[in-house]
Length: 211
Image 1 (cartoon, rainbow, N blue to C red):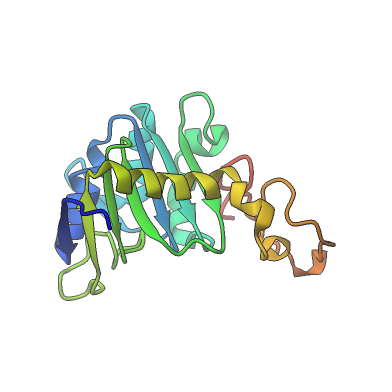
Image 2 (image 1 turned 30 degrees about the vertical axis):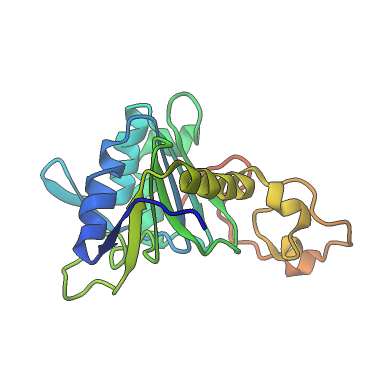
């Protein structure tokens, strides 16, 4: 057993510490793992705005933002994303560094900032999870923050394995995945099982238009 130094977080502290205290102040990178992605509101430039606006601001500063998620982002999030033409057009190239990757098996929730600070817990990237929801309306969530190197390395390794497609090679859900990378397990693919969302979230790591 490896003891670590960590601080317990719950309630509004999740938003204050994870989103405002760390994500918004990132200098190099923000990696997020979440089951759901919604247009949660955050405080930005004196107003409450969709989290996509924060991602765009980070990308403009040269911060790499990657979101690993299990379900198609909500329509309001996609609409907010579409308003940032640079992110939509360049999709991670030319300095616009907002990237997304869908994996139906992702259920861990984590935020890794600058490779040196980590949140792990139950909260998704939603208003009731990590967002600026009223204390009496938000979900009951718990988690912890830490700068423990070993814990950061383990979570980073899991994130990278899913993001890079290394996990796809042995995944038993490869045939049903809407966004697989490379070749899956050596067995006949069943094309009829692959759902088509009409949203491009694959190797180009970008969202298509919400429509």
